[in-house]
Amino acid sequence: MALKEGWTGRVYEDFEVGDIYQHPLGRTVLISTGQVYLVTEPAKRVYREVDSRRALMREPAPGGFDHAQWRYGVGKRAAESVFMSLRRNHGVRGVILRLPVLQGEGDPTLRLWAWLERLLDGAPVLLAGGGTRPTRFLDVADVARLIERLAGGAWPRGALYNLAAPRATSLRRFLALAARAAGVRPRFASAPAATFSRLGLDLEAWPYAGRWSSVLDPSRAKRDLGFTGTPPEDFLPRVVRWHLEHRPNRSHPSYAQRAAECAAVERLRASHDGIRADLPGPEPGIA
Image (cartoon, one colour):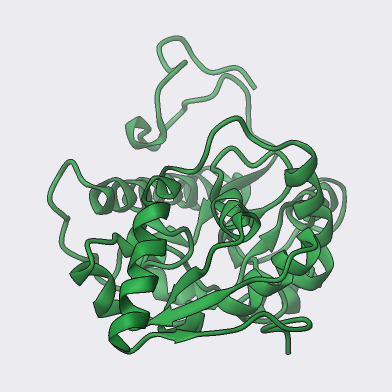
């Protein structure tokens, strides 16, 4: 769809409610993110659609990782606000899909590869708190199928929907499933989260391990749209296989501290400082 002169190349933070497009909008889907919840406070373990109404957290100091994540979430909230105004005041048939971390082929973020590279190198994989942090990712193929169905099927009455896998999975179990799909036995080591900063390790560098990974409740989408996501044990074999067959020519930025991670595991083992090592075994960590 063509934009009016002067709008090409602008980003979503620039848009104001009004007659932006040259032609009336038909069925329109805005892809949003669970990040709209993560910039509110206080933090929650699981987010429902109404939770985006909560107060914004204070803006982090500019220039850091937290600020970049905060700006992304706030920007998506602004995009949603414009979109909802178009829906209310201009008759746009629009729906917003809020997505967690997507898993799929061709992922340019290297987030899954960050963990696969660790699992494949054979050294211990250090997890904060035993990797009990919940995850609830989404197969990108599920999103594509839903959008295709919305394009030609019945249009929902609601405006906002979370999408996610059918159930939450601990980070450790998710990684164990990824390891099984890759044909390797993981060597997990666990340490308290507070230990990481003391050892000079940045916990936020690990994808999915820090605060900027949302866990969404997709109950409304299941009720209104008949949406059921694919569980990780079903989509990971396909996704991991793609990563192994198309190995990137670079590592995730967090892999730069891999040597420090391994050294930290050895130091913690020597001092018995709250670390727990899990010996490899059949189907480790898969319940």
